[in-house]
Length: 177
Image 1 (cartoon, rainbow, N blue to C red):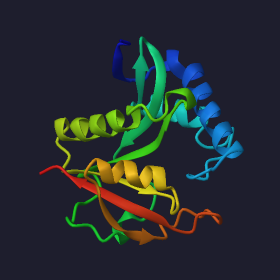
Image 2: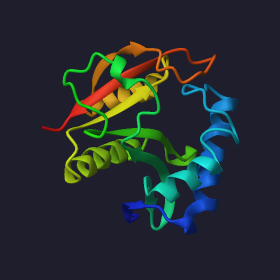
Image 3: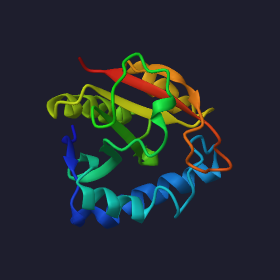
Image 4: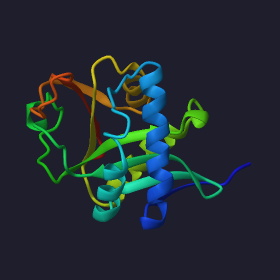
């Protein structure tokens, strides 16, 4: 059995996490690109470096090697106030999951779910009242993932991010208290 951990990332992981995102985005572009990510553009080395610099990038490792990665912070990067939230939480009272990815050969092994559960636990530990996430419409794997882990839908809205090919996002929430 491999040793599986979720760790906060440091600079020593820049190359391996950039390669992980590159492999995932390449696979998506060659198959069905549910999240509409762009190879070498987003998520990319810039995502990794920014997440490490801000202390918000986490990796799921198997025997020390990254198998998954995500950002967990309290920046929604868009107009989350538009959501039909079950609770009126202000920015800073909830955390947001961004750029969650699992390397292609490790997909469908439950690692994405482990990262989602970690995000919920980490948010609770830090005193946040909820966890939120946005999903590209049609990204059924992500929608199923969050729904399986107890997230409720808070509507579909234009978050005013300025993406011509993604005019709206589906919002999800998980309340902690």
